[in-house]
Image (cartoon, rainbow, N blue to C red; front, top):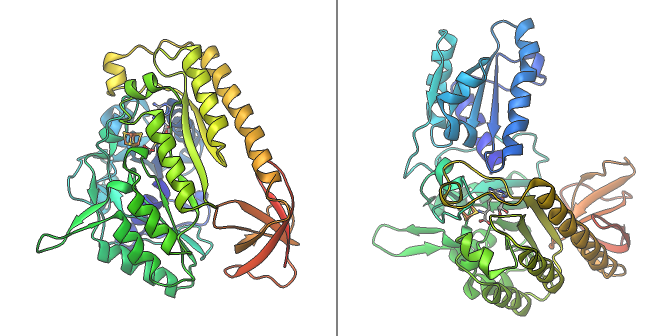
Length: 428
Ligand code: SAH
Ligand code: SF4
């Protein structure tokens, strides 16, 4: 999501006459787009800001600013704490950036952190940063108001709002015409996407997906993230009717214990979640499922932790993002729940989940050996120029000998071997 936001910022600044530099040594401004979701994300940003001091000593006019959720969360406090910062700009204030940079050039410090209930940057055509020309992100909504007890997002990104579907379809079509072959539609909870057309009818996420997927059968469509409480059969039916909607659903579970889920304010139970997993498998038998999980949330017992491991054994995820609970100022948990699992214990539980998931991913991948997939070729493998990589519909990375394959085209690849993270294969 930050990646997509940086592309909007790039576009706003390009219109104002600013350009990107190839190397940081040539920059007059450095803008760091930030995440506030966990403390370690913030610490990395602070480290980066401090590192820039050396460059600022050599280039006296170089100004550094912070964009995104850390700017929103900390506002002026951040500039007081990191005295080499000249500006902060929150996620709904990017249209104000040209003004803000002008103030900074005049020697002032500046902060723009107002949140909006309507801003979606719908009319801005993002510049594609560091693009491979094949895959791109499209932001379809902003903000979140689910208020999961641990989560800072509703406070840093404001109220949920959806973007005009016509602008989304137009952006996807333009990308396709430029040669892109895959778009990922982004929102904190895409299942609650809703746009009211003049006259009163509404467009929901299934209809939006249908419209984007209808642009061309050669355009792959992905999306993230769907909240399990809102994953509907209607969406699964739309997916089943479009082979170019990718067979991969990211369904963050957070915990395998009903008591934890209630405390987290996730609004579903393990039984509900498993019912949604069963629905996915019913409509889309070849769909991969991935998740997010948090270890060591407030009052989590060994029994709760074991329930999470059990859920992982039941669902057998293809991939998981696994985190230690990090207390965030301003959240419900910060106000009302103790951060009472000590760090060593959080680490132990997290490591157990990581080890189990690694084993499951490897077992899942071993079953892939011998199967054939249509792969969208993306580019050279990191390890060798003789090999290319791409992904299948399930979002698994396949690496194979180059031969006559070209990036940006679809090729059939047979899986011959695997690791826990990658499938190795050969062109068919
Ligand atoms: N909107 C998405 C998640 C966005 S944040 C959803 O609800 O699924 C991405 C992930 O970060 C979350 O799914 C959660 O697993 C993790 N996360 C959020 N807040 C956290 C915190 N305070 N500590 C640890 N992990 C957290
Ligand atoms: Fe955070 Fe919950 Fe919103 Fe996801 S749905 S962004 S976890 S509050």
